View 1 (cartoon, helix red, strand yellow):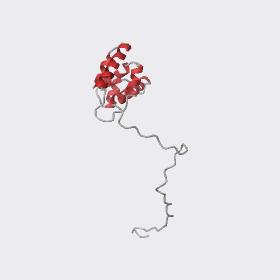
View 2: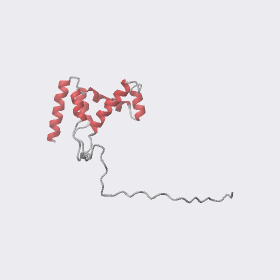
View 3: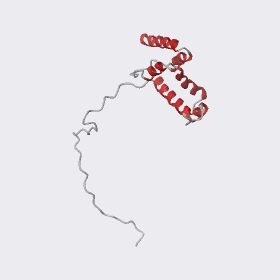
View 4: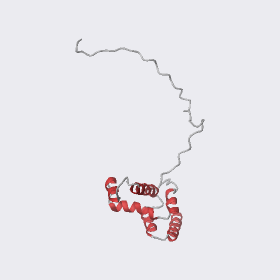
Length: 141
C-alpha cells in the first residue's frame, strides 16, 4: 500500500425528477393552507403572553424567583416587574390584550406604558373603564 490518495469509483442511480407543476400533497386531504394574516402581533400582546409564561415558570418551581428570571433574561428586575404587572389586569382584559388585532403598518396602537396605568388600578371595574377609554382614544387618534 502506498501513502497516496485512493480513488474509489462507483455509480449512483439517478434521482427521479419532480414535476414542478405538482403542488405538494396536503396531509388533510388536499385543502390549501390557511392564508397568513397581514401585519404583526402587537408588542403588548407578546409581552402579555410572556408574563403568563414567566408566572407559570415561577409558580411551577422551574425558576426559583423573579430575580432569577431577570438574570436569565439579561434584563433588570424592574423590567421583569413591568412585564409581570400585566398579570394584574382583569382576566378579560388579559385576553383582550392577547388577541389585539395585528398591526399592519406604523406603530402599535397600545403601548406597555398605557397598560401599566390600567394594571395599577386594583379595581377590575375601574380597569375595564380605563381600558374602554384607552380603546376609544386609540380609535379617535
